Amino acid sequence: MANKSFTLIVVPDHDSKVRRLHVEKRWLRWAIWGAGGFACVLLAGMVHYLFLAKEASKSRALRRENVALRSQLKAIGARVEHIHSTLDRVERFDRALRELTLFSDPQRNLAMGPTEDPQGQPGRPPLGGPNSADSPHAVASRLDKLSHEADRQEQSLLDLQSYFQDQRVLLASIPSIWPARGWVTSDFSERMDPYTAERVMHQGLDIAAAHGKEVLAPSDGTVLFSGLEGSYGNVLVLDHGYGIKTRYGHLAQLLVKSGEKVARGQQVATVGNTGRSTGPHLHYEVRVNGIPQNPRKFILED
Image 1: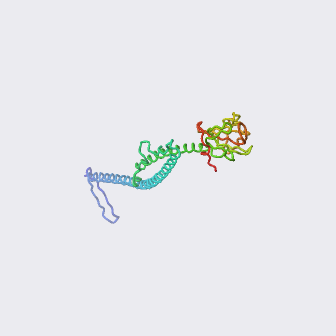
Image 2: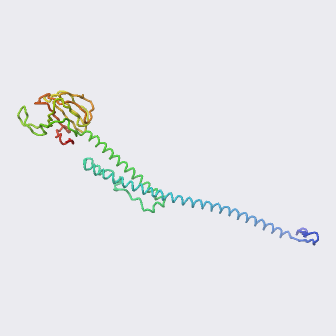
Image 3: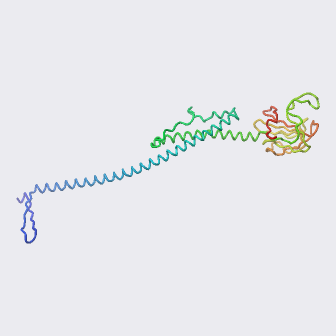
């Protein structure tokens, strides 16, 4: 027994009987193995519990993050819809401007410009229904389409800006005011030449005015010629660009020189009686690409 068991002596107190318990070695080994196994199971359970607790914490954090992301996606979706509606308004305004430019300048045909999609699809591609904001992929796709549309709209507006810049310069070049105030004694038409008594085409306006009356530039331009020219006496020629030139004859005094820049309303000369003239007056011509035009059709003043 000494080699096969252990004796446990239990002494309850000094008056009680001593108890002896004999425990075989194999039962002790089983008890030790059992306790060890239980400890391992307990340790594994604790480790698993801690792992599950950590995963649960991560899951809660992910759920909170997911809720926050969904909220952000909805906000982004709302902003995308706002941008989309804004681009719609800009495109309608763009089309309205292009229709106006088509009426005023049919040669440029801007109304048929890049308001059409470069791939041949007119208008803006649809961006999906209201639930598309719930999907990050859908929102990214809509943002790509909006970016493409914004680039296209920017190019369209740049074209319009260029057009209106040209129009501003053109308007500044149109001889739209009277070069001198007086009485029109001879209009743009056929008339009898006072010296030869033959009917000839009078290619401008004769404006009778007092000698020394100021002569104004009818629009912005550059002095092309300033000097004597045959029967017209002192002559001034202004180049206004876009093929528009104005010519002034019988001047008393020339106040500008060749190459000088002038502005609309600036005094450039005075009315005179130089050259072949029956009295003080201004001979005024407008030529477009070298062809004489009736100056009255350019003048906007009464």
